[in-house]
Length: 496
Image (cartoon, rainbow, N blue to C red):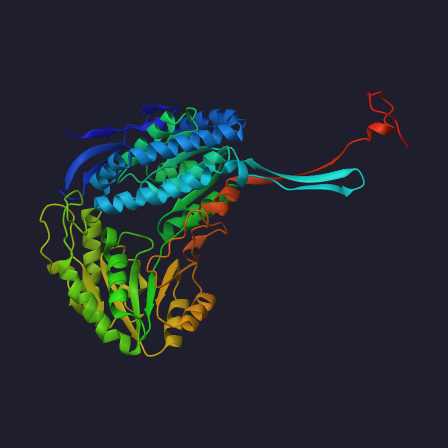
């Protein structure tokens, strides 16, 4: 029996008008477990209308009230993280440990937003001119929307909604239709935390719902995380319709390993960063750039580790890597392995030949050596458990290779040389840099975002950047008459 997954409108699960649905599967078994409703443009209008009404009241709420709701939500999220992790694993497939880690990283963003009374402080200049004061305010936008990907159904929405709601906005979440249930769990937690109905809305859907949000006149801003082609569409459509847009796109993250690096440390990092969550991470390492003599021992060290990874149901104890999100995506990822081999790459470990469960959407880990920048395994965002090894002779070649890539989301360098690392962080043209850290995801009080084709717009996600995105600055210049010179008796002593 499948579950009917509804929208969340005005504090209630709702069908709305559209009867279109999409299937939801457990990727570990291939079983269809649910049917999620897909919103029409009329449904978008109804959802936004509810959010508009709620936003008018919420923006007038005190900062202390907003903070109290966020603290309560934070505690509920912490206390019920095991339940939420199980929901994520059942629909996405990642192992429970990865699901719990995702929730923990999202929780950091909620904790950051609890400090909203301090974070939204304006500035004040007394006597900017004689008798004139100037001060600044940050005010909410109204209704804002988040369009989020399947690979992080909890963390990415929390990147967005915590700051948006703390700032006084109403937030409409359009989650991925592939794993939608986590969003409803979040909605129930928000309600239990005391958030007024309508301030957090969940609207399921596909392109029709997305375009409805992008063109609706009452949606002031849109946040997006996903592939670069879709990010470009989101940015262009949203800005054309007068909206603020932050659209984070795809990635091809490189990890540079210098000859002086600790081989075991680098190999462990590469395995964790490349194959965790089956490679379905925007911060996954997909290319290792081995400099000079680092290449051979690093390839051997990675290859010896891969057979030890247990591939299976993410809910089962001891599993290291779960399935991919759909059968179609699994087959697409597998096709890149074949394309790499045909183009001349050396298949060191072939995930297509791995001993994995027959049911479900599984693919084993793949390691390709002697990959060159003209191969599709290098140029395309594969989003699966495929790691490519590119060999270069020098540090400068490695740096040039990274800087010439279309994507510029995250990168890492492994070395014992502080000077080399410092030069790398200074010169590399990538938005997030790790030094002996394979997945440089910034903490919640910084911000997340890449450069080049990995980001459309100029605003990064969460942190102070997120609060600025979800608010507008207003500057007030005021002059008040001196009571001592007023013609009206205000009860002040008149002195000259």
